[in-house]
Image 1: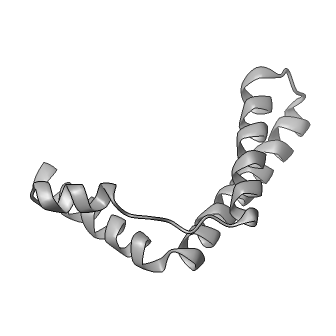
Image 2: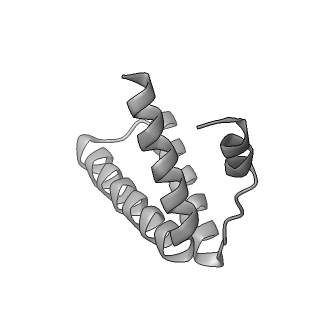
Image 3: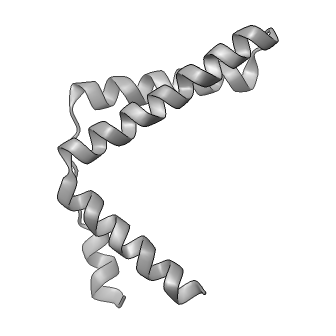
Length: 85
């Protein structure tokens, strides 16, 4: 990948929906609680499970709203891995 390809990556525009924003906010809040609060093992496990569910929702919403952009990023990352090896 050359400089033009990297510039094109920087110019990608993503569709950000209200649902997407809500998921990101909830992920940040959940992560902060996990990192900063003392929780019982049961509560921590439930919150970690919830966080994993949010990550899946995030990925799904990103893919549904931005299939072309996601494909471009995946292609870039896979070519970068090949170069790094």
